[in-house]
Figure 1 (cartoon, helix red, strand yellow):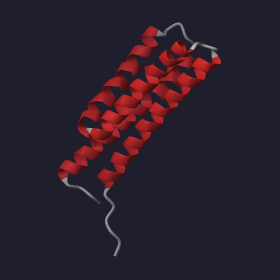
Figure 2 (spheres, helix red, strand yellow):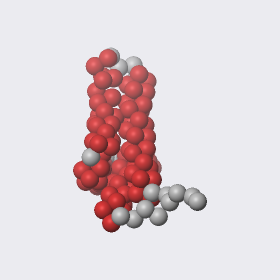
Figure 3 (cartoon, one colour):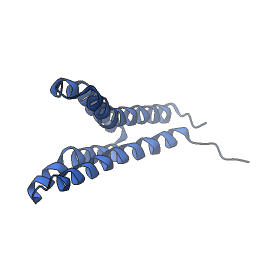
Figure 4 (cartoon, one colour):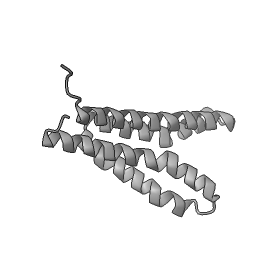
Length: 127
């Protein structure tokens, strides 16, 4: 007989993977843009620190403490979703949409997945 699928665990792993992919993308982006702009080491480090390492810290926090991760993922996602267009209103709409899809949407989705995972676990749903 087949063992039941633990949906809460599946959602937890999906949120973790999404969070790490999101942070990894921005770490790579920081390194690549710093090197591509021929910056000195200090400039490259600044490109890596934000947002990449900050996002990695958030993903690791959510990995360790999923209940807190829900709040932090949703908070950073909402902050970027609202704040980026306001601060960068002079950018073309296509740039703003790209940034929203790559910087705001992944943490919002990860936060929702973590919320559903913790909710299912507290209710005791496994199938």
